[in-house]
Structures are given as C-alpha cells and as structure tokens.
Image: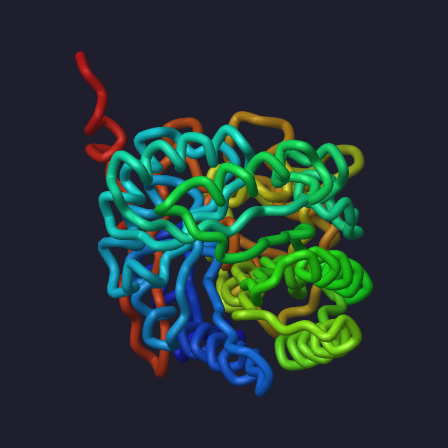
Length: 415
C-alpha cells in the first residue's frame, strides 16, 4: 500500500517517533507560503508590512521562522506577547491587539518596549493614556474600526457586523472622544487605522468595500496614516473551497487600494496585512491512530485516538475537513463513514459521511489543512495530553513542541 509522506517523512515513521495524535507541518510549504506573501505584497507607491496573526499557530519556533522572512507578528494576549518576546522577533515588530486587554497586559506592553498597540475602545485608550503618562513612554496607537461589512462566513468569525464586539464605528461618539484624548496626550501618537472583516473569506468584494470605507476615513486627516487591512484570507479545507491563492489575492487587493487612493488623491504612510490561517493551515496535518469501528443502524463509525481536544473547529464552527487513511493511500474507498473522536461528548465528530477504505485497528488517519487553530485551540479535555508538534522537511524532522506528559497535567495541581 502507498503511504502518505509529509516533508519526505512517512506517516508511520512520524507516529512511531512522536506518538499519536500528532501535529505535523510541511516546513517547505510554510516557507513557500511565507515567500509568496513576501513577494506578492509589495508596492511602488507606499511601504508594506506583513504581520503574522500568531493566534492561528504560535510557538517560539514558528515565531523564529516568520522572523527569518522579515514578518512581524500580531498578538492578542499576554501569553502570545510573552511567547513572541522569547523568540527572535524584534519587539518593535510586535503589534498588540485585543478588545479587553488587562491592566497587567498593558503594563507588560510598556515594560517590554513595545511600540505598537491596536486600541479597541475608549476605555482602553483612557487607560493607555494614563499608563503612557506614568511610564513617560511613547506608544503608537492604531484604532480598530468597525466598518459594518458582513463577509460571508461563519457567524462566529465575522468580525465587523454592526454589533460586533470588536472595534468602534468611525462616526461614533466614542471614536471622536478617542481622537480628542489622544491629541491631548504627549506620549500617544496616532499611527493609523485597523480593520478585520472576518475569517475564511473568498470574495474580494468584501475587501473592496472595506478599502473604500477606510480610504474615506483617511481623507479627514492632514497627514498620511498607516492602514492595516487585517487578515481573513480563505484557504482550501475541502473541494468545495475555492480560494484565489496568495499571489492573486494580493494582486487584486493592492490594485484596488491603489485605484481607491488615486481617486481620493491620497496615499498611506504604510500598508499592513495580517495573514494567519492562509500561511499555516494547508501546511499542517494531524495524524491519528484508528481504534475501534462500529456499525449503527444508520452510520459506520471509525474512532480515532484524538478529536475535539486537538481540533475543536468541527464542533465549534461546524468546520469541514478532508481526510485519508495515511497508510492506505491507494486503497479503494468502499466505505462511507463518520470519523469520531474519543472524548465524552456526542458532538466529538471530526468528519461526517466521508468515503474511506476498510481499515483495521492501528491504521493511521490523516486530516488535512489542520495547521491553523488546531494546536492553538487545543485543550486538556478529559485530561487528555496535548500532542507534539513537528516540522518535517527534506526527509528530516524537528520537534517544535514536546508531547505533554501525565506529570504535565498535574504540574499545577495542589493537594
């Protein structure tokens, strides 16, 4: 039987060495994606910058890799900030997002020497103003704006509908108060505006509408400002997904922005994007060992040794994935099955109604395109162990995150 290889390494070899379940990244694919963004997102008209949206998948090793390509990172918590600070990413290339940053998180930002904060609301800016005065330290502020555009995606990952928890409306009293407060502070500087219209977006029309809104806002200011268009670029999870690809998406985005700025006789100080999922999702694979199989009146189940603790997205978002039996890649797919996990929840189902070969206990299942929001949203539900994370390239492997042990589970328990 033909066996799946990832980065030149057989699936069975990966599981034998690192255990199952296992997160595996094709490092060459990661590097190809990074290079594609770096080459495609360039303009002769204004400087460009790419920030990796680290919430998609963050480890120190991943931070070091994106830094090699000149990317900055955006972080949304003290934990993500701490991880970035332990990596090779320069502190002035880190941008701090989040709608409810704690006082301790904001203090951590100032004390780390950070220079960029994306401010979500008036209460946050009020606290930032006080802290900037206390630390006597400058900070560049980018305001997250809610432009009221509803991209066609899952309701939980749409981020700019009118009542979204993220950002402020440009014409709101809160935003006007923010501008006044910022102008009155000697340490805070207006860097520009940020928008993020959602995730897993395939239609460019939503981006065009957001660009038109943001450019209209820039027209109210005398000096060029930075425009951050966020991320949300779609990827292929199943055959039904039709992403444009990195190069084409960037070409269309830059072309439309250039036209919009030309029509308004404006420019920008800098243009930023924040890809996350589109950098890592399709480079990632999850390997499972198949356990028991079971027949019910209406279903055939293949049970695997992981599930919702290592990939919550099917349960949370009804996300769709593709899979194969990794050690029987050329076997005839005669069975229509539901792939379910081992956790004590009826909703612990990874993939429904998929054609797969007949299997035996111990066969390996691969789920494709799990590189985003698998490891980063994993949990210890049912006291399960978080899998290892491995990079594979040219037949060699590098362990990026060790598999948890039972001792790790108890490390913070007090008797």
